[in-house]
Length: 180
Image (cartoon, rainbow, N blue to C red; front, side):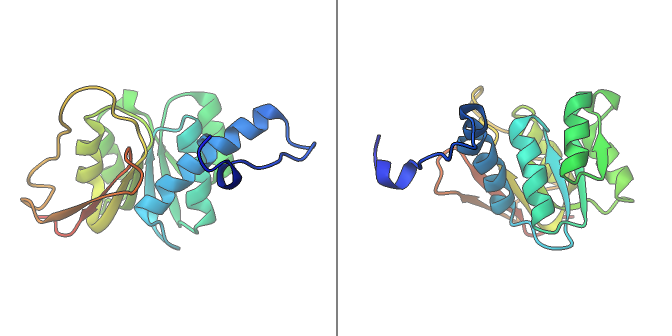
């Protein structure tokens, strides 16, 4: 292993190998999404996907002091876990367009931050549609298929936006500077 001294840690006897697996993947990836989105105290945050990584994004968002956490998911056990970690509202993608549901929940205002931890390549379109001007989208979802992602031109502010690439090759931060 490269840099084993910096990347490995001795596990206390009280942590099982199964728990340690959570600490090596789901927790840091979910928390990294929170960092990429730059979640701040009082933010309204949308977490798209509440599998293991998304659940950790919900937990990290809560720890950062978000005022409202909207989570997208359908599995009852994941919804219950997201509630326990601090999610206040839920969107079921099977009940219709995610963007429309989020805009309804926020009275047309949208959200300050979006963390993409699930979905598919079309999820970016949804994220751009719901993030407020000046908001940030942090992506930790692996995009393993296709060549392109769709970003809606008008909601993107007809191109007045910033895309920053994280130092982690698979992570993307999108900042919406202006939106019509």
